[in-house]
Every structure is written in structure tokens, then in C-alpha cells.
Length: 590
Image 1 (cartoon, helix red, strand yellow):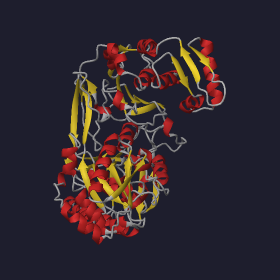
Image 2 (cartoon, one colour; image 1 turned 90 degrees about the horizontal axis):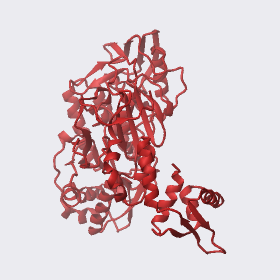
Image 3 (cartoon, helix red, strand yellow; image 1 turned 45 degrees about the vertical axis):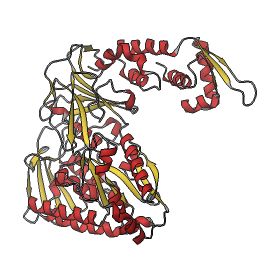
Image 4 (cartoon, one colour; image 1 turned 90 degrees about the vertical axis):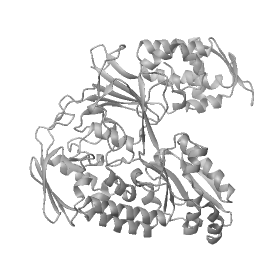
């Protein structure tokens, strides 16, 4: 399918649905991301194929014209039927996301639905095909700070040890056993034998050392966790000893993180051809899709699913007739799919910039914003599925906070706020845009001039926003590790928003409190220290928690073995299908 042709047709259809369309050549050059000369060349090419007649505009300022041979609806349906026959999901997704009437697809919506979700190929391979609504950021374990990407890494790679959230303890994985000295400075790990990487070589202690040395480089996500490493020694092929400068009982928990995925030291790292040792191996990755296949020689149980496909569909509003297992889109078109909602996956919050001079530096202004940001009102007035009100990082510790909007005027006067512009950052996520507009409108009622600044998902997730750009930012945090480690990472990871915006004084206090937390061996006492740390941040209004959002997944009723991981996603390596789908997909991979 010629995607440029249909991009042009959809664009011009929104100018006029007539077959004869006036246009500016420069507009087509812009939507094709090419020069006007190349746009003209394309039009001559389409004219030679007989699909249109192109008449250039004569003289400066005169519009050009295109006369199409066939109506757009007819051309779309012809290509769509051909794509369905060939199981060409890429072309189908492309057509579904074009800005054209969706009722054109109504007669074949069932066939389109059957292209996604559970599939059985001609040679009895079981496939789960899913939609994600944004392009993936990075799958480099040392740079990933986003929960979806961290989840995918757990399906492709393995860490030295794992944390069991149910039993609240570290369990063996690549390392079948470990020993630590009484002073918590010397950790020795004994590796399983015959663990294979996806390229066929056996994993050994040199790969563990290579991974740790790579992770210890500045500007990596886990750098802050590994700063105390003094020495890494490979005693033999399957034994590695790590010596620390200072005692750290919490050290082993860092090694459970997806960021510490063990990678082969004999392969140049390429996140688009990622080689690790996990239950699934990467067979294709581009802007359109990520395709994983079961790793037949995985050292634990081989996945029952043979293949998992993630297809990118950023314009998700037009795709409500397709089951989306890994996004939060309501899906009611197919009774075979059941919606699973999980409340309290992560937290949405406001963080203030401690580097930029301005009113946000004043505690009284931050307190005024605290009383203004009433998540209960937001939930009642704006969102049907807002989640639960947050007052702590953890949902189970959150209570509905008391807000006193009558104090706002006095607090603003105390902060000497004169109505000046305050830059309020937010992501481009649709619900974030809704909420930020509500906040700006509510602020205006109290005389606070918030000016919204949009920040891309990548920039927000990896703190690429400069300190001069914002006074405060609204962001969502979804844990990318187990509960305790996730909280430490939230506050200490240099790639995340709090570390980026907090003042040096706040960061120093967080570091002191975090070290106290890590040195405490008793879990209940650590829990009390977390509450103390979180209360310090919120009572000084460095952070304002908003709500714990609901996470929604549309799962086929025949999917079994669904167990959640810390990110709120289900572990693909344990999934199986009770009754195979009746539709047989073409086998194009094995």
C-alpha cells in the first residue's frame, strides 16, 4: 500500500470531499516531509499511474488542482479488503488512524477485530497481538525509566535475582544462591549453569561483571544505586563477588530491577536487536511494532504463547473497535473481551521547581496550590474514572486530605504574589490535558495566572526539560520496580522529575533520609521511615499528590495464567489460551 498516497487523500478529503480538490503544493510537501520539488514529482508519478489528474497553479498565489479518478471511500475499502486477506496489520492500522469517516469500516468491523487479540496460525502457533498507543522510548535497560518499557524488558531479559512481591523477599533467578558478609559489604553470587543468551552463548560471571561496569557509568538510571561498588571479581566462570565501600543491606534489591538485566559482553549493544536471556526474544522492532517470540531454550519454563506483537496506534480515539490489552481505553465492542480495572497503579502528582527564581520558591504559594488542587472536586466535575485520591506515594497509605480554599488569598498575600505568570508543565496525554485545563481554570478563579506548557512524553519521562522552562509540573509515576525500590527510585533517580526539579537542599535531605531507609533491615521500620520521608515532602509542599489512577486492560475471556507484575501489567511468559480462536491467521514467521 502506498501510505503517502492515502495520507494525501485523507488530508485533501478534509479540505473537500469533492473529486476535484484545490490545494497548495507546499501543504503536500509538509505532510510528506519533503521538498515542493519532490512533492511535484510524486504527483506526476500518481498521474502516470492513472489515479489522478494534476493541474499546477499558474502564477504566484494561484492554487493547484487534483481530480481523483475514484472516490476515497472506494479506494480505502479496496485496500482494506486486500490487507485483510493478506493479514497486513500494518496497513490496516494505518487506514484506521486516517482522519476519514469511521462508518466506512462498519461492514467489516468484525473482520478487523479478528485481526487483533488472540490468533492461531496455520501451523498451530499461538499469537497475542496487542495495541499500544505511543511509540516506545528506549529499551536500553540502563536508560529505561518508564513502566511499559520496564515491563517489556522483564519479558526479554533476566536479572541476577528477583523480588517476590507476595512473600516480600528476594528469590533466586540467574543466581541460584548468594552469600553476604555480616557487615553487608561483600556479596557473592553463584550462577546457574547452562543459561543461554538469545544468540546461543552460555551466560557466565564475566557477563555479570560487564553488566555492572556498564551500569556504573555516569548518566545511567541505576548509577545512583551502584556508586558504592568498590570491586567486582569473577572467582570462576559461575561465581562473582561484589565488594562495597559501605554497608548496604538494600544492595541486593537493586539487582532485582529490570535496569539490571544481564547482557552478553561479546555483543555490541543495540536496543533494536536486543540480545538477552529472557523468556521471549526480540525478532523485530521499529516505529510500527515490536515483535517477540518464545525463546525455546529458556532456562526456566518456555512460554506457552509462541509470539507476542505490540502494534503502535497513537491515534487511539479512532480504534475503539479493537481490543487494547496494554492501554487504558474502554472497549465494549466484543463480548469475548473482559475489562480488568486495577485501582492505584502509580500516582499523579505536582512537583515544584526549586531552581527557578519565582513565586514557586515560596512555601506559602506552594501551600496555596495545595488547597487549590482538590482532587475530589476534579473527580466529581471532570472524570468518571479518576481513581482514588492520593496523599501518599502508596495507595494503601493514602487518605482523603482536607483542603481549605478559604486560606488561598491569605497565603498568596504572604507569598507576595502579584498575579504574575506561573509556568505550569503538563504532558500531552489526553487526560493530562483535560486535568491541566481544569486546574488552570480553577486557579484563575483565585487570581493565579497559570500558563500551560506542553511537554512531550519522552521529555517528561526522561527529564529533558530545562529548569528555566517551568515553575511546576504535573506528572504521572507508575512504578518500574517493587514497591520499596520504586519509591527510592522515584525520589533518587536523576532521570525522573523530582530529582530534576528539587532544589539541592531538598535533594540533600532526601539522600539522608533514603540512606537511613536503606540501612534499616526491619521491613516495618522501613515502612515507618517511608511515611516520615513522604510526610516531610508533602508538609513542606515540595510535592502535591493528586490521585492514584485506574488502569484498564481488555483481556480475552479465554486468556489464562494472568499474574500481575509490579507495573500493573500481566506476565506474558505465564499466559496461556484455554480455547483457541476459530480464525486461522497466516503463518509468516515460523
